[in-house]
Image (cartoon, rainbow, N blue to C red; front, side, top):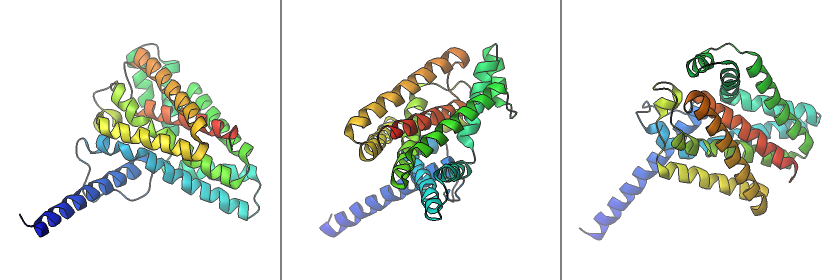
Length: 267
């Protein structure tokens, strides 16, 4: 084979890998948000699990857009309290309240059901109960109060980007370590992320925490995320036998709130 042929093959392989990474990113963003960026070809079995490495990038995009809205509100001299509401509302609109819905369903199921079957049944019910309403209200209040405590536009933007990226970075590891509670549903259909996707997602989490919060605080953030994931994993395994898409939503919400609260002590 000539040198020209070798270069052509290498270029072809590079372009193929680049196309694969781009497809993964589009799958991740289309799954985590309402943005119309999904690939033209429908995702096949295993595509979502493989693309899970890009979840933190999708989260960073959400945080960036929400932070931009806060910045625009600040330029218009809107008070920080109201600007924080607008930023929070933007992130909810971008995701279609997917994670908020998961948190509410998880709280209702784990808090209200007596048996594993009943808990799973409640979690599939679209209606919200007392436990779900309380969990959702607390999540909104924690995140809103953290943003208002920051006030500085730059700090808010950093906190939003890091929180949204970090909260989604732990999802692939959770999906890999905790088996699905059902044989159907969003989490079960997504499949188990391969080790490389888990490693890349966690690596992106460490990068985001290090750049946004600093190396010392990065360790604190990692410990916080690990503790939240471990506690939720033990609870989900004990009560429903594993994880579901709703449990993943609850994990994202808890992790996002925790990182925003951490940001108030650093920024």
